[in-house]
Every structure is written in structure tokens, then in C-alpha cells.
Length: 420
Image (cartoon, rainbow, N blue to C red; front, side, top):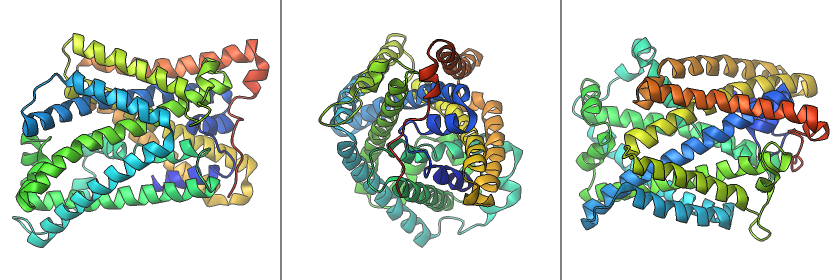
């Protein structure tokens, strides 16, 4: 991810567009490949966003039952969240950012308290180097874990999606991207080691298998004050809401970027005159979420093991493919248009990230059934959706090339100007 960020951030000096991946891949690999990536991006971000309604329905139901004794179907809570997210999305990015900031700070604070408490106690077996031994880390049995690990970084690239709305231009995007990569990598590693220490390296595997959903909650309950466990359960709900809001905004901006360039109906490119939010794209995204929630409710499908895992797996697959394509596009664009940026930024870092991400894409395909917890039918449908999105984007670009060449020539070229 750090290698990816090198080329990605260098590219923001030359491309500043809310289309992010779509704009970068189009500039580097051409309009047809860029449009294919755009189709995959729309499906991936929407899959991640809609799937999160399953998580919020699950956690809201658990929280309401625990604190108030209320038992309602998961889709009721998901529906309430949908209305609130739609409203905040319409209000614009500033309102959403304030909500996300409060939730993020609270979550980090709880995990810091838990980590410090575990490290002070030392756990039942003390500190162990076993989790860091190469034989354990690089074991072929852990291949599915690497797919999930990269999923934990998902979203840091959204810094570029807001590149048209931030103060400071490209410099702000670069700074935010590097901070996000560094913080996620270091903070998650420390917290994860604390969880391993809390159970003991010899017992963590069995504990995770016995209760994967409650693994961290048990640590917080055992090593901190009882009230902090209650706070954490509420934060799990707020965390799902924060992810929902962030993904809603990201999905909207992709719809907006593709609408204004003609890959989607032009109406998607409209924004509100006061908040400047892409309200048509937002309404369409909310309508899609309603349809999916209703279908899962009518057929009695599980919100967590069904909606959350299936949508997340599709999103993981799509975003990681986009990362790999983006690395290749960055290398090709910078070598042709910015050789003065240096060999490291234009070639070495993007090439290494492309190779590494290519390996991760293979691992995701190999372990797709593990990620979805579904059967062959579910897995086939999800992969077909990803491939279909790529093909639909490419076909749309080919249509524009033959029927509307002036629109085709402008694909990926709209940006807010590069500063900083």
C-alpha cells in the first residue's frame, strides 16, 4: 500500500478529479480500459456500501436488544440508517466529515485503552515473537488472510475522490493518503498484537474459531472497565454507520463523475446549488439500497452472513483489481508525461505495487468462497457481476467512440485543475 501510494500521490499532481481511479486509469491506459474500470468501481463501491446495511441492521438489533429489550427485524434499523445517510449525503461532505471524525476518534480511544491495558498485564503467556515469525506469517494457509488484510486498507484511496472539494489541492490529497496508509498499517498491527497477547499466541486460534464476532469484545470486557464494553458495543454500531456514510459519499461521487462525462446518464452529473452534493447520484444509490434490502428481507436472507459478506467480497475483489490497474496506469502515464518525477516514482514503486497487487488478486480469487461464506452459486453470481461491470464499461466507451466521438475524446479529461 505504501508503494501504491507513491505513484498514486504523484499522479494527483497531474489528475485532480472526483473520478479518482476512473480518471487515472483513463489517462494511463486509454478510455476503453478507463471506462471498464469505471463500471467496476461503481459496482464495487455500491456493493460495499449496500452490504454495510447488513452490518448496521445486525449491530443495531443487538444493541437495541441489550440496552432496551427491543426486538425488531434487522431491515427496520437498516431502513432508518438509509434515511439518515441519504440526508447527510445531501447536506454535503462537510456535515458527513464531522460525524465521521467524532466516531473515528472515539473508536481509536477505546482501542488505545484496551491495548495499553493488555500490554500492562502481559496476557496469560506474556509477550511472544511467534506472530512475527516468517514461517507463520508467510504460510500458504494464511493466503485468505492476506485478502482480508488488504480489505482493511480499503477506502484510503478515497482521498483522491474528494480532490475537487478539499482545500490545498493535490498537496492535501498526498498528505492525507500517506497519513492514512501509515496510520492504518501501524495502528492495526499494534492493536492486533495486543489481541493476540490477551489470549496468548497458543490460544488465539481456538478463540477466534469459537467466537469470531466477539473476539475483541471479550478482550475489552476482560481487561478494561465493564462500562467500556457497553461503550464499545455502541461504537460498533456507530462504526458501521460511519462506514456506511463514507461509502455512500464515495459511491455518489463516482456516479457524479461518470454522469458528467457521459458514461452514465447526464442527469447523474447534477449537483445541488447550495450544498454542491451530487443529489441525483445520491438518490439513485439510496434507491438501489432499498431494492437490495427489500429483496434480502423478503427472501429471509441473513444480513450478516449474507448481505455483509457477499457485498464485501464483491467490493474487495473490485477495489483490489482497480488498485492493480491504477498502478499500471500510473507507471505508463508518468513515464510518458512526467519523466522528471524520477525513476522511483514513475517506474519502480508503481511496478512493484502492480506485481504485489496482482498476487493479491489471485489470492482473492483462490479464496473467494472463504470470503463470501457462500456456495458456488453465490460466488459465480458475484464474479459475473464484477466481470459484467468491466465489460459494460468497455462496451459503453466503444459505443461513444463510434457514435459520439467528441464525448469519447473527453473521457477522463475533466478535472478541477491541479494545485500544490
